[in-house]
Image (cartoon, rainbow, N blue to C red):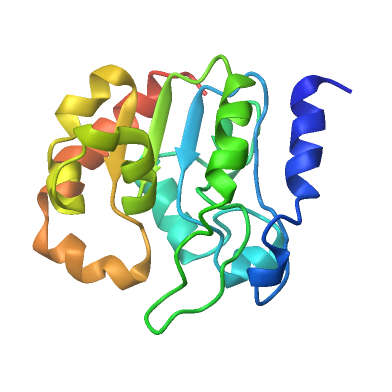
Amino acid sequence: MGKLAALLGDIRACQLCAADLPYGPRPIVQAGRQARLCIVGQAPGRKVHETGIPWNDASGRRLREWIGLSPAQFYDPEKVAIVPMAFCYPGKAAAGDKPPRPECAPRWHARLLAELPHVQLMLLVGLYAQVSYLGAGRKATLTDTVRAWREYLPIGRLPLPHPSPRNQLWLVRNPWFETDLVPTIQAAVRSLRL
């Protein structure tokens, strides 16, 4: 068993925050050593928790449309790594899901990304991924950060809003995202020759 396979096994067996997960742990991650695209999102939703398939919901369909990949391409771990900020479903909040558990990314991300040497582009989906991976280079709001995408593309990172149907109003208020940034995302992903 290779180092990446062993690490993925450890992640999938993780019980670190089991006591804080209302539906129990079910870490969802996808990665292959040859992956050139890495998608960093929030945490699996309830449907993803139930199926064990990342982005297997309406948000995932919209995300695949934005990036221009077929399900076969998207779910090929040797093409696309899917590394949420927390690997388990955190449960429901008053509006939407709870935030990703804070223990997960510090424990696993650096070790996992070290085993993905061919990643050329990271899509940072939502605020939690942007805070973690852009740090002080992030703008004051998610909208401002996504609008400043040209600053991040040269370092191989693209900030995106969450593709949830709950964000439809954001998309209506920011039509530049679909007219300007989505074609750029698709071109950047095509350039990876997945």
